[in-house]
Image 1: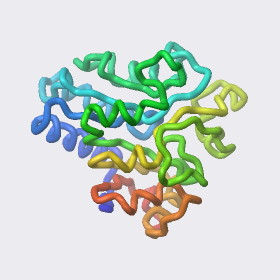
Image 2: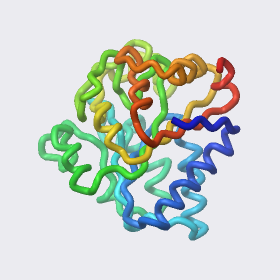
Image 3: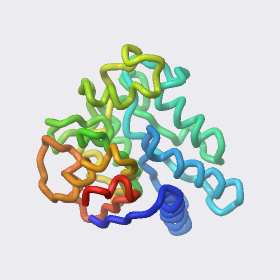
Length: 239
């Protein structure tokens, strides 16, 4: 696991450059995408690069990590809506090739077959992650089985609190979600994780301790052969 300490703008540019290199080598690459505040700067850089003609997404397939239960794709806090607004609407990607896990049995992205669909596309080449203050990645809360595949989860109070800043009130935050499992994430060929801000300093310190435990789901990343942590100085302040 490699740690790079940069400022936020440098982080976003570095990840954009990694994706650009991948797509030059493999134009039909499969990207694993995340929501939340961490990757937005990366998406802004990808949009600029696409508009400048430096990156082409026409043959790209994407799979998102997770989605809230109970929110329609058109709801302004659903993760499908987030991805459309922050990336897909602004690049030349075929939206039929963009996937978000669903609990609808009639959906091609039904969560119980989501991992098979990823496998059918050759697996995820490049996975973007953020991390929660309690060590969750995607919506895999402490105690999640390391062998878990895409599944329905009940969100911990700390995660609901973390995400409440995006809603009018904490009572509006969904209490369940569908999420790629830890094994689903570990199946990706390359993983980058963005950790910024002093509120994530304890999480980064624990991740870098190398202890692998289900009490801190992100710790499983220590067992992956190709992980890069992009952190800023605030997040790295306890190292």
